[in-house]
Length: 465
Ligand code: ADQ
Image 1 (tube, rainbow, N blue to C red):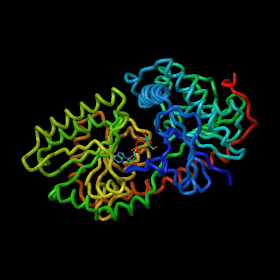
Image 2: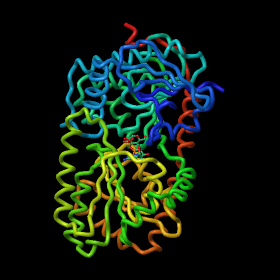
Image 3: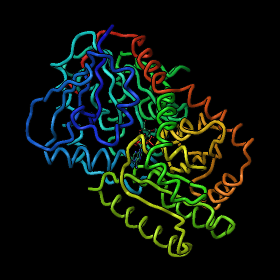
Image 4: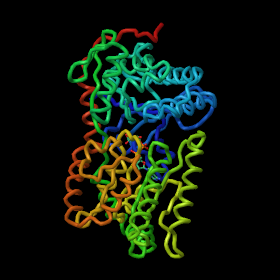
């Protein structure tokens, strides 16, 4: 069996696993058989050039540090300041500078140069996410002929949006250097194929296969999932934890609506809070009867857009609570930190309603975790944005347009007043969707595409020049 080499920007090192085991670490747990290698950034800033190694659960971890300048240009400015807003349809937030793009390419070149000597001839290499789009091209330029796959965790955008990115063609060409490129939904795959067709003149077949510079490539659909059984049993136990008991007591018989997200403009928190305000304005019967809890883990705080978002959220939470609170009831509880997965699982089980309303989201695992955590006898209701990849599979949620606060408020009202029978029927269907596309299946499907990918002798690509 070939060795699996996973490459991602951040590596969840065994030495520093905190309260949030990263989504990717959980998703790949099954695929990371003993002997596998995980390569990427340590999360530290420094000038050490060589990789540092550690072991955990039979898996080897090799990481490099980024210098201050690399961190700023590659990670903060280009990956998170250009690619992230672009891939979430937020062109107005994209700030392109050619020096950041140069830093992005240079860090990918450095990743390739450090990884190449660690590779064995039959390794399967699986690269993750938008930080590392040029990695295969850089590895090929060093003569690496292994099969290399790429999975994009964000949405993909149609040509009309992609063309706004300076140097878009170069990045599309870089994606074509992978043997297999995976997306969460058929819509993202289609958008990618439309881009390569229109912008590179490539002619993909009906299965997303095409030739790029004499080398076969394929775009595939493989929705990510969760360890549904594991999360369900975690939620069953966590429902009896001290935190869950305290939360239940604090509700004093009121219903709980929950939201759990990274604090990111793609997650639609401002319009979600606006919808909660409208619920109390237009459906006053819910005042004092429901409390909302938003857990928003701070992220990317070095970026101005995220600092501004946080200030706006503070303001709208203050306004909503100022307007509707009673001396013994606060409508919207808001915490800006991460909580442990087990605690979250218990909170999901208590919540009568989850509000998952991103403006755009590659998949959204919270929607799946909420469903997996429910008590089948008395399940809660999922309100889900039509712009989350998860909406493709979870069609029995209350699907909403997150830009329409009035519609979201009406869906919350509907969820809070929904009878047991309808809740059970909807949950059964959602349950099937979550258990049909688990984390394990996600890995199996991707790796089987990669193992079967038609392989040809490597050719030196453009980057070699
Ligand atoms: P994210 O944008 O991080 O992931 P998501 O899919 O929701 O979004 O995953 C977040 C994970 O972190 C979930 O497991 C969630 O429980 C956890 N989490 C979120 N907020 C938390 C908090 N406050 N405290 C503790 N845990 C918290 C990216 C893409 C998504 C895609 C995933 C996986 O943006 O669209 O679904 O990768 O591909």
